[in-house]
Length: 116
View 1 (spheres, helix red, strand yellow):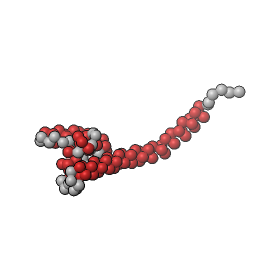
View 2: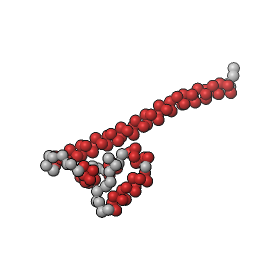
View 3: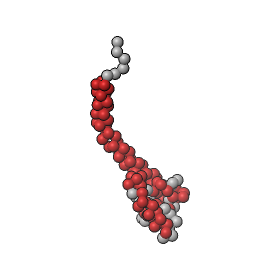
View 4: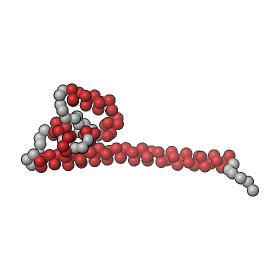
């Protein structure tokens, strides 16, 4: 009776595993990109809810000047400044996000910058 695997059996197992990995890797990348898009959509949904709360608190009329208003939502209606920047944008352009935040606060704007 023999013990263990022969070299040929081991090579067959390794080749089967690499073939499966090669087939599943593109699916994994597509799934990961869909998760990032869904994260951005979820953040936009949360910003929409915060805008609705803001409108209900301040007179019930939709604000016309929305981009500056997004920064004003931060302390009271939005828990984190990170919600105002899309995760996909933050991942692909970290230096741009830092630069725009510094530029926005350098002009004396107390509210955070938003990528939406």
